[in-house]
Image (cartoon, rainbow, N blue to C red; front, side, top):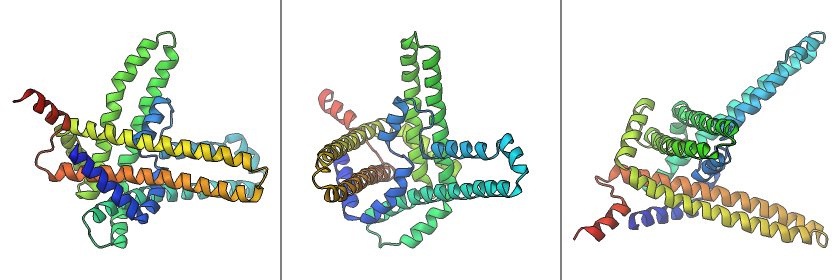
Length: 314
């Protein structure tokens, strides 16, 4: 536990002392990249888990509306309407591309900045940003590829749930079988991302090294993941309950002090979103420091193994 405690304490210190990380965390929030959000998406059987999946669904839905044959046929009589529709579609493509670029670059910059701050390097945001941009496509491939796998797995389970409604035991068995796959993919995605950004590996090598790192440290990785998941889940629940309680009292006060209550409501919404961002920044900072620990220590021993050795080995 001392190693975990040191990592989490350092992550909390970095998160609380550097508001720059909060700003970068705004874009990381859009990616939905945390174990808590992933678990909620998987257990609720959402078929489009993740920012890029939602973005793709929304885009193709709008594109299908614009490019519908009946609409195009009707617009042919009025070329101006057709031109406007196509321009709107092009504009949406550009906005989607810009948003995707911002999310990936923001996530990259967050990872690189955290490790620079952890090593007490002088602030070099411009250099970190330039490096993050150069790593856009490899990281984009990792993030989108991971979302596709999660989308397929949730789709598979939801499909099984439809066909085997009268056999819930089969659904439970399928979930038990697929859950380890989700966990392994989640670890590989994180470690490959860090291999790309922190060790400068190529996309191909990053997955090979990520698999080797996970294979050699799977137990300690699971221990840390469970610990961090519990902490972030607890923090999320506390923040959510505080937000709901505050909102309840404010709604009752709206009738007496409408102007003041409205301003306070906006402040509470802002603080709620800020708290979520800080939790996610703490989550990413913890994983980055844990990855550094795994890759710099010659031997990373599980706390569970050490505990069992103290009990059974004299």
